[in-house]
Amino acid sequence: MPNSDNQTIRIQTEDFDPGAEMEALNDEGATGAITSFVGLVRGDDELSAMTLEHYPGFAEREIARHVEEAKTRWPLQGIRIVHRVGKLIPGERIVFVGVASAHRQASFEAAMFLMDYLKTRAPFWKIEDRASGSAWVESKTDDDKLAERWRQ
Image (cartoon, rainbow, N blue to C red; front, side):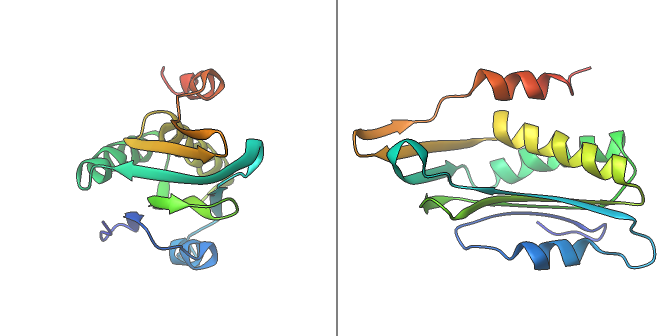
């Protein structure tokens, strides 16, 4: 879902290149800060795989709504979100969030805002596979508490 104002939202099964995603945010001469976050599948507690599911079209629209909210809160020059779906194993990349701005504070805060949304409210469903069996991932209270800071 790219558009002309340097905003991209992609949900895909393929891996992504964080360096290329960051470079695409750089409007040389105007950009003063690019903040990025890359989330990985952790292999703790004997996790062997994680499968992520979503509703195509709906998930992109919901993420775009929160991107628009970020753009009203901070002076941003570009936003790139890449979220993977399908079966992933420990060590693989799940998500990239990149935000460009003229100044670092806006870039940092917008990236945290978007990542908190993706972690707590984005329409993705996760199943974890372990030696003991498979189970849906429930939301975590700590993540919800972090996301509360943006509800003002």
